Image 1 (cartoon, rainbow, N blue to C red):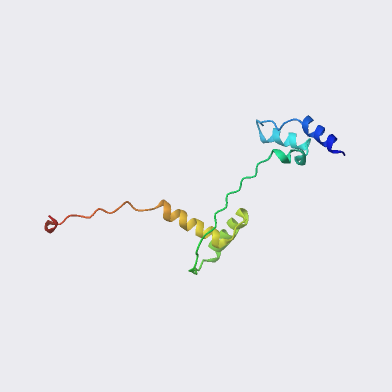
Image 2: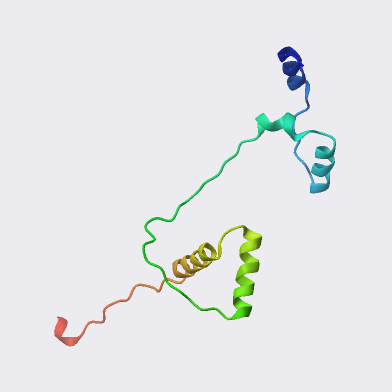
Length: 109
């Protein structure tokens, strides 16, 4: 196929429509080639790397808990240490106690 034919084909393809359902989208992609629309996709990936993790901690888990963690990491595609660290940080950030107010004593005045 010549460059002119490719350009003509690219211009004549129908645009990706907005789909009302997954079934409608599946039907569209059953009759269209994803490769023809590659130039229309924007890949956005935000990555955050942990910095300076210089200390480690070892924890012991009962077999049932370890099995549940392994199941969860296989679904998410991440390692168990990463998942447990994420959970720990989420919990710590979500459960910050309110600031403590210093009680005044009779001698403070």
